[in-house]
Image 1: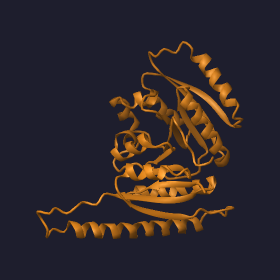
Image 2 (image 1 turned 180 degrees about the vertical axis):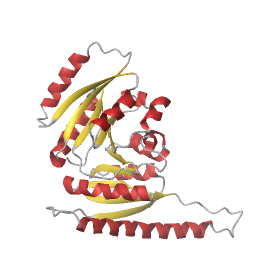
Image 3 (image 1 turned 90 degrees about the vertical axis):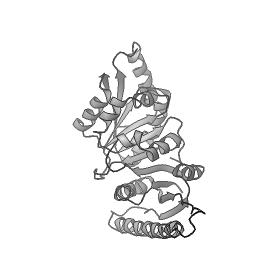
Image 4 (image 1 turned 60 degrees about the vertical axis):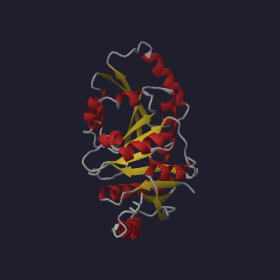
Length: 290
């Protein structure tokens, strides 16, 4: 059975992200798994009477209780949802070790379809590329990663904006989006992004070839637009706002167009204004069965 893995630090933003994952579980016919990781701090032999060992034990038990409480809250939310053919099961995992190490173990299982997490308090899309935990998850994941901002109220996904420079990895990402789009019923728009001064003499030809490949997916509701200029991130933010997008999608590869763009400090500053949930699809995508 497919699973959606929700990473949680047991804070309010992570709980919000877990709630937002519930309707996705229903639509994608997937179960929900809450994952909390922590690294116990060893007591120092030089200070045998310190309280670190006790604090570690207390935190471990308290965090397990918080996970169980979060599970119960989510189950109550499920009861209030419209009846579906199948409601997801909810379970939690409490694991010792770094987030990256624990996540890699879970990704060895082919049933993980999607990873969901909340952005850190104090920022939005900036933490997608600056927050150490979130950046590590994205860099090491071969599954899509969905990041929810803390202040964004989760609602139905009716319109999805995919920012692309029309490469092969983007084509795989669009294929994935058309598959989940049939289940969620959203409209898909593809934004071709071109930096000012880039060599795009063959842009029109590339667009036509890209469209021909996407036409093979036979997705019923898809449109195309172009964004060109110096301030790509600012224009993309405005486009999403003006066109009432519910989700922004990027294809991530450290050596790709977006990898280069997000390495620019000015781009990071502009991306802080982005308040949409963001789905990051790895260029070398593996899925749990869609």
